[in-house]
View 1 (cartoon, helix red, strand yellow):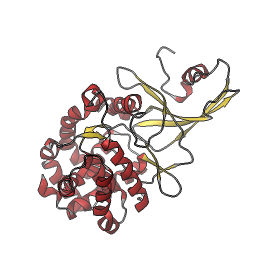
View 2: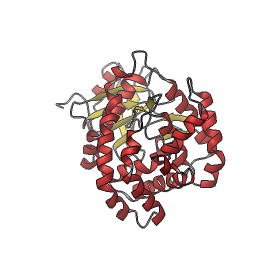
View 3: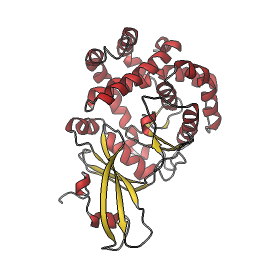
Length: 346
């Protein structure tokens, strides 16, 4: 092949995998794959290896560019592939937050071609965005969020250019939401109540104020910390955070509010536990702000899941499950924002 790495599962050659794992030529007897996950921005596959010798993984996960050209173009436009490759290439091995180990990470200059070979976390399984989370799932994920937000690279943030894609994406997001919200409103009119859709319009009208807010203590943030992007053990404890395609330098309150706001299917359960969950998260962070200051930011970022639902739904391939997922991602944080009077902070 002309490029330096494969981008579709059928392009993975035995010689390439042997090279990645520093295995002797001819030691990989066979290689098979099957699709895994429900991602809409890229495609993931579990590869099974039949090795003749050596201590090499029997399986690994390969992440490839989406086969859908719309999703692939959107990923390049918002630098999503570059951010995820950057995370695994430059940070993952040094940060205590749980994520799969990386065997190989590479991306082309056009940012539409990339490959990630990752540790297979089976039997851990993906959370269910539609069904919602257990309290234990949210609590253990917030512990990893605290580890992530406490991490500071030895060389500083400025030496990781991919961390700063969020700056340019903010302007793109503002324009995209203003132009695209009428499309979102019509598309989801049968899935979301009028009061939620009205709140969405008020949010879009004030999106400049939302985006302009700058944190006092920026940190590396996941950016899409929701159940579909988290792997759990059977007992509800987190196994790993995955899908780092929105990883950037940002406000830690975004991740916390996003996770809590999108995870509880029952608003009463979220109301009952959210303050304690935030306090526990802050207790785990190094150099954490005081609760009152963070709580204001948490209230402001109650909209984070709603914004992601609007923006992502406009830029990826449309599916039935995707529409139901985006509706849930909009509805739950919308109720949260109403109860926390988040609009008054914009």
